[in-house]
Image 1: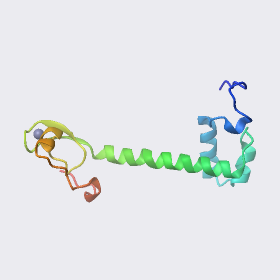
Image 2 (image 1 turned 120 degrees about the vertical axis):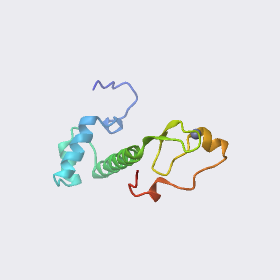
Image 3 (image 1 turned 180 degrees about the vertical axis):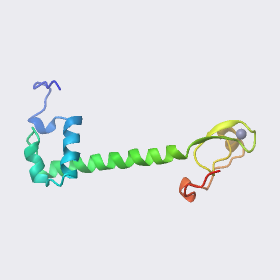
Image 4 (image 1 turned 135 degrees about the horizontal axis):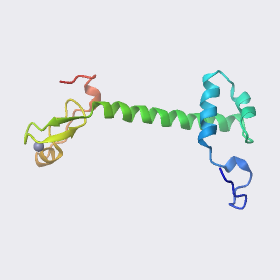
Amino acid sequence: MPLDSTAGFKGTSARPWTAEEDALLIEARALGFKYGEITVLLDRPVGESAIRARLDVLAAREAERRESERLASRQKTRRCLCCQAAFLSQHAGNRLCDVCREAAGHVSPIEPDDFSGADE
Ligand SMILES: [Zn+2]
């Protein structure tokens, strides 16, 4: 990654984390390395708190990815109970297309979590 030292960053701690560094952090933690040990592995001057903060960010990102994957797995093309048109239903309880739902002024009180994988 090209670094421009005139870009205004004071010291390398302001440098964005690279994908390689992120991967190294995750790998090192998975292997049981302590934060202090990881600071030595990285080619940047960071403290344990920076490592911990970065791992928090990565964990949150991963949780978000899993959640969107989980929700996506419930999506399915279903037929609208009202107009019979095929539409991308968000979950098993979502049986009205957007047009019909809006026309009915109906906002479903049912959230995906009310269905534990139940599907047709
Ligand atoms: Zn419809």
